[in-house]
Amino acid sequence: MLPDGNEVLPRLWVGTVATCDAARPLGFFCLNVLEGPHAEGCHHYRILDDQGRAKVDRVVGAGRFIDWNWSRSGNVLIHCGAGVERSPLVVALWMCRRFAMDLDESYAWIKQHRPQVEDRRQWLIG
Image (cartoon, rainbow, N blue to C red; front, side, top):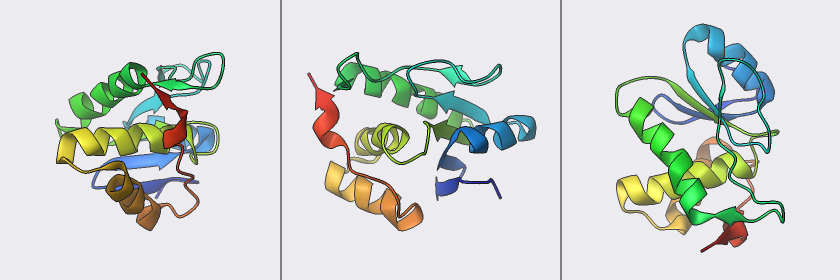
């Protein structure tokens, strides 16, 4: 349905900048977790610090955007540049908290739906 995007749970998508460009006109809530803003209408929430580490509280904060919109039956897209590292990290940690999973389980689930995902849990700090 969306270019370069995969639905990893009902109404929850992981994708790229191009996915966001296609999703916004369809009424998706789009969250960009890149270092800088992407486009008007796409919410931005930076998760990496200047050393390329992801603070847990920042990743959890991004997950609150998922929770708020996804729990209200809206379509949600989380994207980074390629939809391979940052956005899957956010979704994986959110799934751990939402569904009482561990990171192995959440990453395995996401990879079933988006095989190109890279596990970046080593980026998480404090």
